[in-house]
Amino acid sequence: MYQAYFLGHMNALKAIKSRKNQKIEESKVLVKLSQSMKLYKQRVNHFEQLQYKQQLAISNQKIKQTIERIHQSSPSIENTNFSLPKLKKRNQEEDEIKKENARIKLKLENLKGNLSNRQSKYEKPKRYEDVLQEYFKQKLQQQ
Image (cartoon, rainbow, N blue to C red; front, side, top):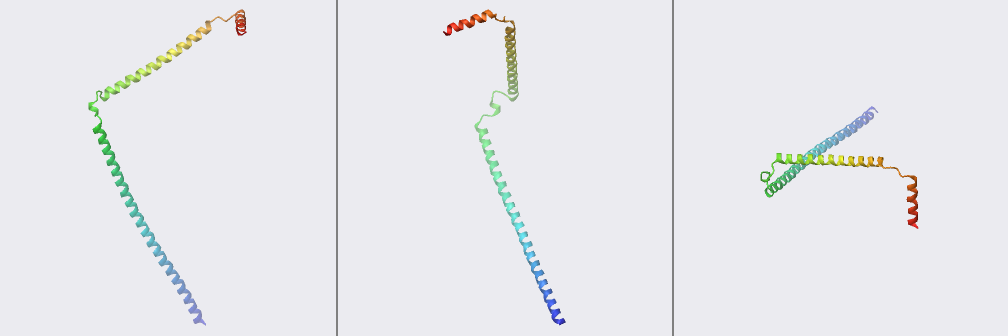
């Protein structure tokens, strides 16, 4: 009876140990798979970075070529009539003229407004008789 109990206990321990070993093996396989996935991801990222750098280099080269073509086809700055300081001075003078014109226009508008206000103040109000006469004239013309 003790032997049967002992054998049953031993078999249960062996089953537990075999399940434990099986889980350990499965976890080792999973670890290897995850490591290989990380390695593949690293390789893919490295390849994508290389491709991106190559595309950037190609686009930069195209940009440089177009810039060179533009420089070759257009006249250079040295050949123009104006140097940069002269252009800056000219632009500043134009800006000053525009500001002065705007200021003068504003003054003119203010003066016009003042004149119209003064005229309206000094106009004599119409008499009641004049207003009646104008009204009757309009009535006669309408008939």
